[in-house]
Amino acid sequence: MKRFSGRPDFQHDETARLGILLTNLGTPDEPTATALRRYLGEFLWDPRVVEIPRPLWWLILNGLVLRTRPAKSAEAYARVWTDRGSPLLYHSRDIQTALEKKLRSRFRGPVEVELGMRYGNPSIEGALESLKERGVRRLLVLPLYPQYASSTTGSTFAKITSILSQWRWMPEFRMVNSYHDDAGYVQAVANSIREHWYRNGRGERLLFSFHGIPRFTFLAGDPYHCYCHKTARLVAHRLGLKDGEWFVTFQSRFGKAEWLKPYTDETLEEWGRKGVGDIDVVCPGFPADCLETIDEIGFENAELFREAGGGQLRYVPALNDSEDHIHMLQELVLRHTAGWPEVNKRSVEQAGQEAEETLARARRLGAER
Ligand SMILES: C=CC1=C(C)c2cc3[nH]c(cc4nc(cc5[nH]c(cc1n2)c(C)c5CCC(=O)O)C(CCC(=O)O)=C4C)c(C)c3C=C
Ligand SMILES: [Fe+2]
Ligand SMILES: [Fe+2]
Image (cartoon, rainbow, N blue to C red; front, side, top):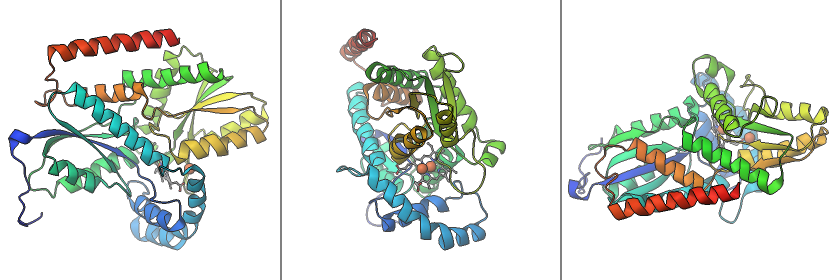
């Protein structure tokens, strides 16, 4: 723990604020091999991400992986890089900005929303420090992972608690564990698919593609596989889909071990060979578009499918900073901060205005259908 350095480690309660820490995986600072070596070095050294005993993994990681992968990955990142930098980062920032605006108009007490990345920048340490400086005494951590996995949500919890455990005055602290079956989230994903169909026409099949995890971690009790299936089932049900109209696969394998099956790429090749026409692909495990959706699904797998004989692969964009997404996140925050004094001190006028907004939303959605 830090010793006294001339500046006390606390704020008075009269100025106490509610803080929301949004977290995401993280992304390199630049699409270069050097930046990727740094990013992948931190990411892949996390014992919750690669569960190979340390001395052996150190040799493989430094002797092999970090010599070859950074350059290859940098090429992929360069394909998706924009003026605003990495898509994962700027979409996460947009979500942060929109959610803060929404929560500030909803709560009467002050609320601060920060963004921290599990690996790379902006760091979780920096985000927590910044919230502390602004007087946050009650903290809700909301990882942008709808489906809990040990390698993502679990690792975020480990990081945050290890930092907070060094603080003299820890904030009151809660963390969202998983929202894979949250009604608002399911509805937001279903709406985004409907909107996509409305704009682009409807494909022969709808594929739900989730990021994979090693199969042995599922066998050891990680709920991720079941949570992905539950999300897909609830969304398909909401869309009124029948068996044979929707499928679940897992993408983004890493390393030599077996991962969750069926694999997205193998499935698409098989569908292509069988002459399946146009299809829609949605990735509800990614609330923000990133390398794995834009490049892996939108470019690589679309090409794979076409070259195998399939039709067009049409990717349904992530929820990003869409109104439905921000609304759903706000409701999630409200539920998980229930009972905290900064929350829900709404005036009658505010409540009335919100009711009108909800009605307008419902009308708009109704009109779109
Ligand atoms: C959606 C949840 C995610 C899970 C579960 C997950 C597990 C997991 N990932 C790796 C290895 C890599 N993932 C990479 C990129 C990446 N992964 C996720 C999300 C999950 N990963 C996202 C959002 C991204 C994109 C980041 C971006 O900057 O856009 C990469 C880096 C890219 C590359 O070099 O291919 C690696 C490596 C493992 C080993 C793992 C579970 C054990
Ligand atoms: Fe990943
Ligand atoms: Fe990938």
